[in-house]
Length: 145
Image (cartoon, rainbow, N blue to C red; front, side, top):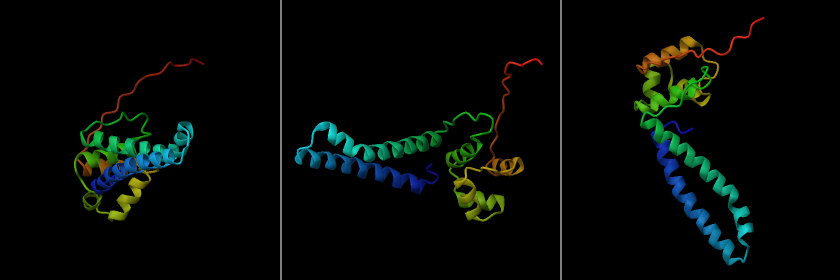
């Protein structure tokens, strides 16, 4: 997951480089006389990595626009906290300062997507970003004993 503006810029640049590399590899394989199906097999790993990075760039651009995924049963709250920080334009250093912790602590928390964080810790992060969340409970079928 892309978590900083500089990482985003690097990823966009890498996408451009990858696209050019994939095209040059296709041309090289054509010149070698490989059949189309063999060329596709040979470049598939490059295409796969390129598509994965493209998805990460697309996700970063969505969250910059404020388009967040739904949090279900708090499983993705960590990603949502990171996404919201990016959306409001707050750096990891600024968040660390507001929380009174080291920037490396915020970096570690985000690298782990806040896995294992307490509700109190999550609430502190949300308050530091002036973030509000709304939880809706959807009842499921109740099984009678």
